[in-house]
Length: 210
Image (cartoon, rainbow, N blue to C red; front, side, top):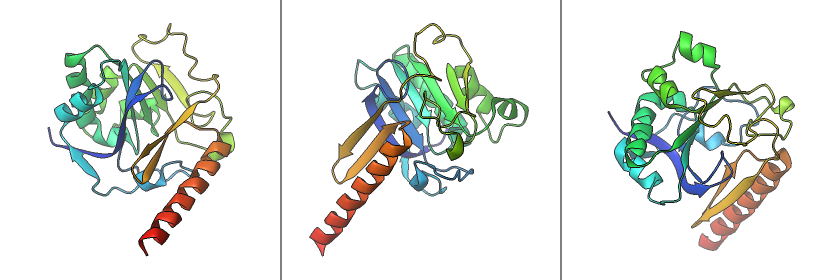
């Protein structure tokens, strides 16, 4: 299996699923949803290249991590590599898996967009599917918009008590050097504030180097 093309990772969050999780955001998405919170991760361009086993070890370096979340970008376009990541992770520790996708589950099963999709779906505990529609963003749950659906594919988290569709949203802002990462599915107002703050920091940094 070849290397994955990764936009970002984060170890240790409670904003993207039940328990303490590590997150992988892949680079590249075919959908270009209006209002996407991660437009820099839409282009299918080289980002960080990492082998699946190395990525799994990185994500579970913190012994308190209980699960992984795959997002992006579009995870199903790197399904084969992500399957290797979750399998390698589960050889280290029993971890749950939440995965976001712009594709509907029926389409993934009937006409997968690339290799490894069926194998990845077999590993996913909770799949959140469908395109983001800004007009349907109700600021509830782990979905970006109300048209997106939550599928408990394994049943492992069905009785967890975590409300994927109706809970109050939470988000975390992580700073790493001169970069900031917004983790979670934020309310629209928070995304606007975050974008404005990042732009001010960027302009300040540019001014400091001039």
